[in-house]
Structure formats: C-alpha cells, structure tokens
Length: 398
Image (cartoon, rainbow, N blue to C red; front, side, top):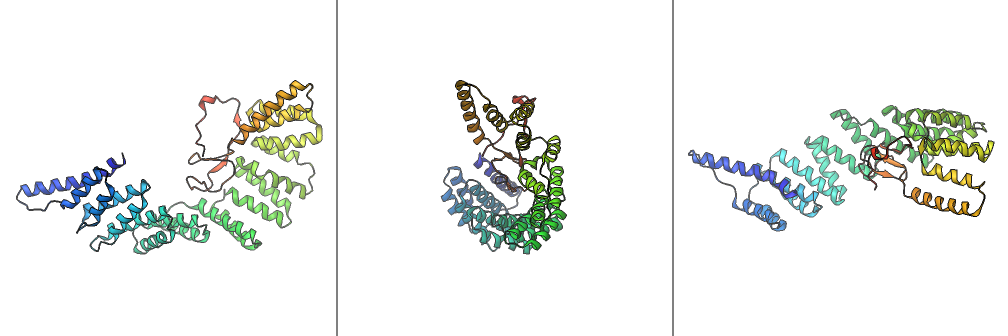
C-alpha cells in the first residue's frame, strides 16, 4: 500500500509526459522524460530501492515533476523507518542549484524531519531556523523547533517558539505556554528560588486560567511560605477547575488542613466527595470514619460506595476491614484468595488516560508520552455500576 501511495506523484508525472506527447502530436516538439527517471521508477516497482536511489541521485536535472517524486520517495522511506535513505534523497535535492525556492523549502523541511527521526536534533534545529529566516514553511518549521526543544526540555525556547506561533499564525497555544511556565516554576522551586517560581506561576495562570497544574503548584508554594489557609483555598479551586484531579491533591490537602489547625478534615472531604466521588477520596474518608466510629461504620460506607461504583481498590479495603470480624478459618482462606486476585488485577489496572489519543498510564504525566499533547492525561473516573459493560469504550493500553 505504501508503494501504491508513492505512485500518486508518479501518476502525475505520467500525465505530464502524456500531455507533452499530445502537444508533440500537434506539431509542438517537446522532449520526453529522462529515461533514467523512468528506469528509477522501474527499480522502485521491482522493490530495489537502493538501485532506484542511485539512479535518482545521478539525474542530471531535477525539474518540478521529478522534485515532487524525490520528496515523496524520501517521505516514504522515513515513514518506513529507513531514515538513512530518506536523508540521502533529501540531501541530494537540497544540493541542486537550479531547484526553485519553494521546492528547496519543502526539501529543507523534509530533511529536518529526517534528522529529527534520526535523533540529530542540532542539524534539524539548524534547518528549521533557516526556514524561519527564509520565511518558508515558517509555521511547520516553528512546530518542528518546538518539538525539538520539548525533547531537550529547553522550556525557555519552547516559550519563545509557542509565543511566535500564537502571535504570528494565530495558533492557540495558551495551554502549552502555561505548562512551559509550570515546568520552569518546578525547576525554580527545586533550586529554592521561590520568587522566580511565583513569577512563572502568575504567567501560567495568565496564559490559561484553567491550568490545574499551576493552581496545584501555587498551593505548594503557599504551604512552603507558611500560609496553609491560602493553600486550602487553592486546593478548593483545583476541585472546581478539574474535579477529576481531586485524588492528586488529597495528601497535600490533608497536610494543609492540619497545618491550618483543623484536626478533623472529614467535613471538607465529604464536601468534595459529594461533588466528585472517587476511589481515593472514598478510601480517605473511610480512614477518617474508622478513627471516629470504627469498622462497622466503615463497612457500611464502603458498601454504599460499591453499590454505585465498581472499584477494585475500594472492594479490597472492604474485604480487609470486614475480615477483621471474620469467624472461622474457611472464611479467612476464601477472603485471602479474593484479596490476592484483587491485588493482582489492581497491579495491572491503569489509573490515568489521555483524552486525546487514549494512552493509559499508572501515574500522572502532564505531557502525554504518546501524542505529546499537554494536559490531556487525566485520572480515570470510577466506573458506575449502572453502566452496561458492552457500552464501555475500548482503551488502548501501552
């Protein structure tokens, strides 16, 4: 199928040749295509790519039609993972002195993509910067630079490129700009530079008011600065910005509540639970109930949760609590077997999923490792007991 797709520009070249011959039949003398070009196409059809490349590289002239074929062939080799062949094709095309400016721009961009695939980021960066300076394919070249800088974790350059994309080409980059500022804020916090972290977090929230990560980092900054009450308010804001992220803030929220002098956080937790029930929240509330009321109240609470949500973690906890009141060895053995199965299944169960590409993970990534989108990975919601299993979407597990 890939070779058939490649033959589309070849078909265009054939149509061009036919048109030339038709013109010649009307008394207009036009030369046919270079026989070497046709020989190279034959090598491709015979699946002899190296011989085909040698023929194309030795062509005396490259015109508009054959340049398109070179570009298509190089792109095909790159998609097939044959990056060395793609580089040879595109390097040869770039070196042609008579190549038009637009086609040279295409060739430079494709060569930059080849270098990126090969991991030669410095060469790819040089070509993309050249395109930006030439004002050719600037948007695509800037996106290429952004991808390079993301892989190199050069967040300042990511910001520079993202702002150019947004201001010059109208590409909405608010979410990405906010994430880059969050990365820089985290780096500043690790080095103890709270002032720089504060500046970057303000800029993140300015770029995207709904950036959950910026709010979470701001709350951590407030706790570190001795203002746990402000942190509690920020964690409440996280619950409104993205209720699905409540499990992520629970340990820090509990710490902030205790630092602010609240020894019983149950009311706060139950308020969150009413707005967005989740396994992590249910288990945290269960611990508070156990301290205050004992095992029987915990069992009642967890049974009520499981009557509406199917979750292995909560079921595991229910069996553990209920097992303490178990009577008789057979019941204990059965419960141990059930717990073993649950623990095994939980160890293989993802906790997060990308809303863009479906990638699933066991920890939170702010940038999806698969599709590279920012802020699209979210905690998986609890599965409602009312759902028909056959109606649930398939999930791609990586």
